[in-house]
Length: 175
Image 1: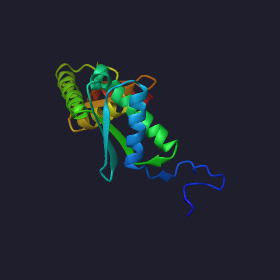
Image 2: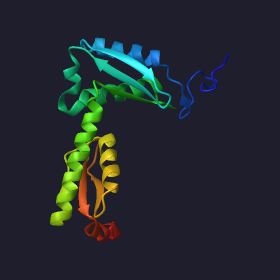
Image 3: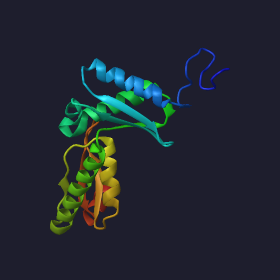
Image 4: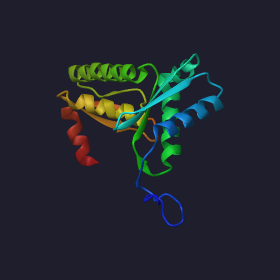
């Protein structure tokens, strides 16, 4: 039986979907965590749209410090290694509901900042955020009238500028 994702050379065809197996993801996550010397266990489930990895163990705080940077790094590694440039179900890594709490915190900060921008009429910048967190802010503030958002900066972490809606229109014409 041949795999239709594999070309004649045996290499996976770039950009085609790859079916990741929850067991494969769990074994890789455990291997990475052990390699890092962390006492953390991964439990993995396939929920049809994504592959969810939940971490637990005494060393979990190492992954949660600095706003969950370790979770994000592990998630990125798992997606890159499992899919190797091809497309597939997104692998999402969490630890005791940390991501949901972080998302709620980001939305709360963004909404509070948007209200200040509307009240004073001046632009405000949020702290640097990763692409996923920026998307959360853009979507949350799209629901709020009177303000607009745009990402500012280069690289992986960018800031979001929250501007009064009237102020942002002239800037975009000149860009």
